[in-house]
Amino acid sequence: MQPSSESNPDFKLGQRVHSVGDPRRIGTVRYLGPVEGYSGTWVGVDWDNRDGKHDGSVNGVNYFHARSETSGSFVRPHNLSSGISLLQALELRYRGQTTQEEEDEMYVLSASNKRVSVQLVGKDKIQDKLSCFEELTSASTSYLGVSSPGGPSEIGAVVPNLKELDLTGNLISEWKDVGTICEQLPDLVALNLSYNLMSHDIVGLPHLKSIRILVLNNVGINWTQVEVLKHSLPAIEELHLMANHISTIEPASSSTVQGFDYLRLLNLDDNCITDWNEILKLSQLPSLEQLHLDNNNLNHVFYPDVGMMLELLNGHESHEKGHKPFQNLRCLLLGGNTIEDPTSIDALNSFPQLVDVRLSGNPVADPGQGGIPRFVLVARLGKVEMLNGSEVTSRERKESEIRYVRLVMSKQGNIQEIKLLHPRFAELKVLHGIEDEKPLVGAAGPQKMATGLLSVTLKCVGASIGEKPSLVKKLPGTTTVGKLKILCESFFKLKSMKLKLFLQEEGSPLPMLLDDEMQSLTDLGIGNESTILVDEES
Image (cartoon, rainbow, N blue to C red):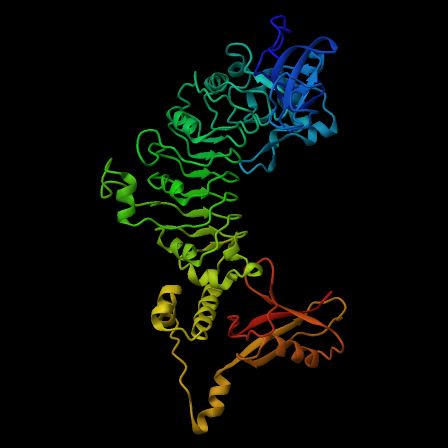
């Protein structure tokens, strides 16, 4: 059904609204007019949180198309709010009489959507020290129903020194309104527009010369619009684009993304990128140091060689004149993807400056799914100083690399196969002076057994086992997990208990379960001074 021409003048199609009394319940007006069988004028709303009643159809009549089967509902106009101005929101939050609950809400959302307290918003400070807003440098009007900047020059006259502004979860949708706000706040360097459904038509946006940090998480933006935005952001250093359903990177005028000369951090977490070739289009950003790609659907990573770059650049510019791919990238977050192959791990060594990597949540880094334990990741990643948020100390690196070499040596593969599957093996073997084991004969027999012994700390952690002192034992590397369980029963005098063993690794938040009873300590890469936790199966 078409909207009535006699619709309520207070609302218009496409307008963002919230429920009266609940500024967190936000939606978009999709219909204005009568509803068959009911009197008066109704507003058809498609709710962001999908907590409506239908899909825009009632009693077989379709009035509008909602995003889901339960995101639409009809509401009387007096039960909806079209929002307030930014200045009204500042007055409401910082000068009004607030409840304890509202004071608890005085925070900004960080780029990763975590709450960060705002130090200047305590009620006493606001009422006593900020009788006028001139001292206010950081403000949050999140979820207050802000829909417009307000009157001309209003904001700049009242909060002239504002440097950080959090507008998360409001009703702003037009970029020209964003431009108006920024033009009135010459010192504004950080702006958070997350959870505002922004217009796809980017018009009326001036040069935002002072903006260094822009957070656009969950605003419905795609990369084509990012390319338009960049011309208004000449000084941008951090750009956060989480949860925007971005699946492709579409440069405007060449095969790789150009401009963004000062962009240090690009956050694309929680999007829909599946092909690493899309990420390569970001490889020529000259200042990019941090790239966040958690929770996409990437299954493979590689570093482009000269041939790939020539093909990617497609003759628009020579590879020699261009920047080395990802030349300044120091941090790459890849958690929660679907990477399975160790070659993707090895490829990270080719990134010139990469020292901080996140791989948790990928099959390749999950021993429970047949993936690689932390010590192997550390050994394969030669330059990494931070892995999955934990520092890689020099001691952990040395021990991990030695364990890794001994693990590979125990596999008895041919030289070419080892070189292919373990690119750093030969380098690490030389670095740590590890020689091939040679069979010893005669009187040297006992020496061979002695050199094959590992010093292992056994620690009881099961509550039902009781407090028992840790033991340090020398065990042959050939000891299997099953045999070690039997030995632990004897060492700790544990009768009729079914045990499970865990390897406690430095830097790893959780110990690794040793669940294959046929694997030996050597097979598992367990080296000297390792710690094994002894628990009872529940």
